[in-house]
Length: 338
Image (cartoon, rainbow, N blue to C red):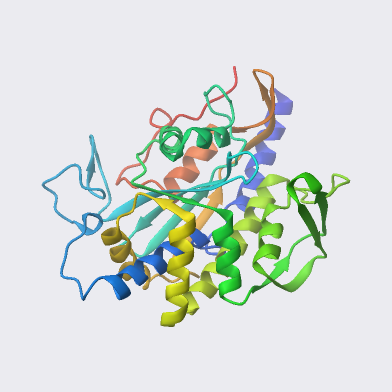
């Protein structure tokens, strides 16, 4: 019991480190949504006089996103998104995020769900849920966080590489020495720490880095890897948003159309684009990684990431809960190994 008490205290001390308010913003996927939405609005639609489903503020229909949801009241015009990036080799989810966008207040809250998060499914880890399709992953993630996810976006990694190259690369502060080779995946990661200019492929390599060949790397493991990825996405998103010329927009639209799967309609994209242009990436975004223990074994599967229920619930309520009242442990489904 004393050992568990020390572990819990240590967890809580790390929690401040894991919540990075205002440091990283919309992942490149959301930047892409704004870009393509703006492109649709600018190049395809005339000056529109429409009210897309996403922008509806009518309270008469409980099915309209952003209003009522069962016996709970949604915050006005507050929408939820599932963002996922498949692993190139396995098709599992390499990155999984839940995002809530409060349009009237221009606030975005994000949580990263570690890919090895323990769930009560046949494959035990949440990343395997994407193999059966984005709708299946959406169901699993929605069950975990306790609310429906209005929209989903799946981004192929080629889009990330192309988008970084389209803006001429990015300047990024690589946090640790990275030295790893995997010939089977044609993956070769060689970087010294410090500020440097990265091409699209190099930026992707920094995001994919987990540990060096000798086992060294991030002191806090996958949590810090996730934070590096999030900071990279902020860097890319900020640069994408600064490229507003028609030529660039056309190129971005082409990239996204070829590499993104989403249930957002063109109308909704245009509406979110118009709203998203007023978002302050430095002050309007908060996020964190759900806290847990990554050394749990379950049904023969090792290194499962078992979430801490109370800490995870607190983060869900702080960052992505779309309702006017707090969720409880009865509302979420944070699975614990027996």
